[in-house]
Length: 322
Image: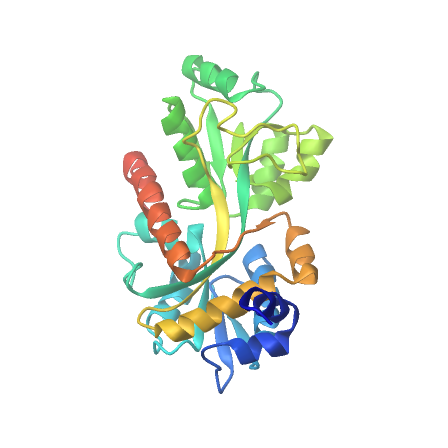
């Protein structure tokens, strides 16, 4: 059996994948999800933990440690022993944006974590209330430039991905919009449908029913490709604003300083789990796309690029959590 055939067989067979790992854990692992149960992070994390456990030959205990937008759970992992037994489901909001909007976090957001691999991502869509006379981003820019008082945009909270994505769009358009923060997406969507707020940028899944019903209007998707659920919705690049890229992504991290061979084994188990058709179907049903990393180094590069990109947005918009 050649190396390529062995790798393909390992993806299909959890037991073979386990024996092929450079490091086999001898006790259960912990996956810290830095949010309360029930959300997208929790759903993805639990499914991935189950798939990885089958390939590692050890159970993975999922712990929800919400608080401060992800800071509390991230701190647990950053300060754990660097042995590969404590893992973090990190993301664009909880690990990247949070470290910029808070004046200080109790860990080093780069050295404190060892990247393992990406799991999934979902581009945000830019929507407006139908009363806003714009069907494209260029039209929205024109409306915003002449609006008095200024148009407003809602977010699910200060420093969230929805906040930063809208701030990024304002910077690209060269316009000033009024920010109206909420404490979650539910009441915000009600106000958007009612016309009490005018614009909202967020992940596709919770927005799709309202877009299809026509109660809100989607202008563009802030990602590199169109989405199969809304195939006629152009990307921000197609709409003339290629710098506006805002995806909510989910990735696996260990504590900084974890030995490379353990990171390599965790990466192999993660990618093998993500290759499972049943797991892939469950995750994509939640409105996100499967996206994996070819190596831990690839995630490390991506993570640093995201930090540079979002850090610039936060500084230009002068956003600070209260």
